Length: 173
Image (cartoon, rainbow, N blue to C red):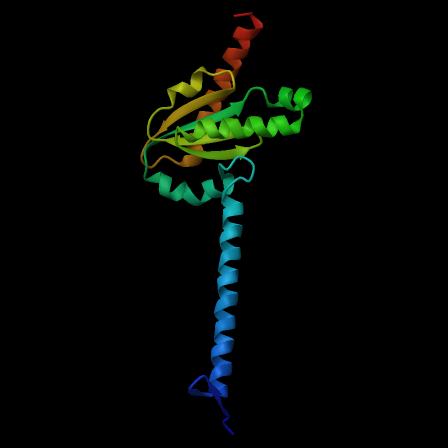
C-alpha cells in the first residue's frame, strides 16, 4: 500500500522519498570514502616531514621515466648524525626539511630514505655539488635506461664525491 505525504505544496510518495534519502546517504558515504582514499594516497606518496615525494611514489613513475631523458641526482646529508646527537632530533628534522626545500628548486624531489634524497631534473643540478650540507652524485639518464640503474649509478658517484671531500677534510684542505 503506497503512502503519500504533503511536503510544502507537493504530494510525495513515501517509498520514493525513502529511496532518495537512501541514495543521498550513499552518495555522502561514497564522497567520504573518496576523500579518505585521496588522503591515504597523499600520505603514501608525500613524505609527511619533508613534503618531498616518497619512494613509493618513485615506484609509480618508473615506467614513465623509461621514456624520458633527465638528470638523476643522489643526495646524502653530511651532518644529520651530528645535528641529531648535539642539537636533538627536532633540529635534525628541521635540517631535513631545509634540505628538501633547497632541492625543490632543482626538480622532482624524492626522499629515498633517512637523509637520502633523489632529484629528477631536466638540467644538470651543478650547484648541488658545491655545498657542505650534503654530498651529491648525478648521472644523465638516457631514453630507455632503467630509473633504478640510473639511481644506482648516481649513488656510486655520490659516494665518490663524499670520499674525496672527506679526504680533503682529513688533510685539512
